[in-house]
Amino acid sequence: MERLIRFSVLRIRQTDTSFTRYLYSDIDWGERLIGILGARGTGKTTMLLQRIKHQHVDPEVALYLSLDDPWFQEHSLIDTTEDFVNRGGRFLYLDEVHKYPGWAASVKTLYDTFIGLHIVFTGSSILELQKGDADLSRRVVSYHLEGMSFREYLNVTENLKLSPVTLEQLLGNHLNIAQEISGQTIILKAFQNYLRQGYYPFFLENQETYHLKLMNTIMQVLETDLMQVVHLKVESLNKLKGFLNVIAEIVPFQPNISELAHKIQISRPMIYQFLDYLHRSCVIQLIYQDSKGMKKLEKPDKIYLNNPNLLFCMASGNPDKGTLRETFFVNQVRPNYQIKYGKPFDFWVDNRYAFEIGGKNKKTSQLQNRDNAFLALDDIETGSQNRIPLWLFGFLY
Image (cartoon, rainbow, N blue to C red; front, side):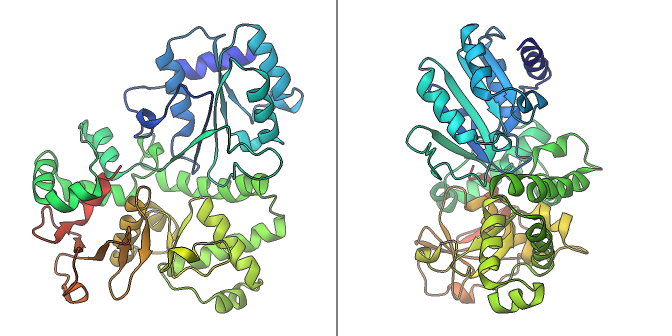
């Protein structure tokens, strides 16, 4: 236990608290069981360590544990926690729970046994908290951490204090909002930088190796997280990698499941499984025209990579501008709003707003004679009427 405490103290001491992610202030830290799920590389570990550092408590009162620590090859989480509680421990922070076999049953036991213990855990976005006998859904308050928004990127790279806006505020007052923001930075240059490398916080470590680290992160999702959470076999893993390579080269596209199955030599049911795995692990985004069809075995109407950074990392050559724009829009709008594939326009948001995405010279033909219809346009600092700068949609969280 002494080694675990020393390791926890060291990690906490090394943690920078000058910038916290948007989700930090939204979490009700007073709850007894909190789960923070999200894609690998989005900053979940840092958030745990920042919380402990902000608490200013004795090391034996709050403990950070990474469940991939070799300690847990010979010691159980329950026994370790019992020792911690007997020493006066009250706050337990468990990182990467999906790497601990039977983690859900163990966490449930801890919650039910140690009434005075507060537990916060992080895990892969692939986890299903309600799955199996150890159903945590009635006990845990769960949150999902997205990658960095364009707003957060500006705040951390240019030391700004820009606040998020709601979609309704953006649509109703975009001119004033855009003028205020663009007056504080060279907005279009910053936006292009963000599209290339700004979604994952580790861009702050070394921009030169960012895409290499990002590719390694994706491989860890496939080779570690999926293997541990859904018990993917090696043969299926190799097919999944091939499937992802195909997707990366042709996104966005309206999938023909039979053609994909034939091209990669896998069954149609496996195609649907792969789409579900990649979507839940935040590698791709699936867009449906009908919200009733958003099920694991329903064909999506359009497939995108999860965020623009992945296009620069995984696609050969420079990404298509139209693809970048649509990927950014979906990625930044989706966390707080329902987004569906639209016809004849690009997207339908919250069953109320129609959006067409394009460059500054985009025409309005698809949106004519339609209420609540907007153009989200690249390469403009400010807009007018229903013409809104695309970058501004990065301020929704």
